[in-house]
Length: 95
Image (cartoon, rainbow, N blue to C red; front, side, top):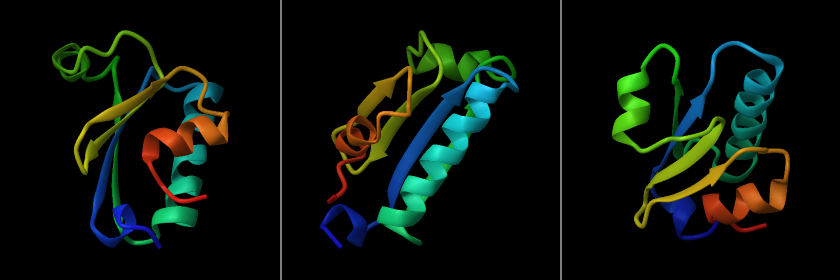
């Protein structure tokens, strides 16, 4: 376990309504979190259609978007979350 995993890591996952892409993004991120950050993460899923004010406040222009809020600095990956290496680099976890 690396230094990031020793404290709570917080993520926001912005999605756009119910769809196969949304389901995949949520499932993929949860699986990665469970594999690399077991019990040391918080994942909040925000539907930009249901809570557009949160997306606007965070300058979210596309979905899905994964944002690592904690630990700083904040990092994000936008679009296709199937590229595991890209997602892991933003999540900053040991591979």
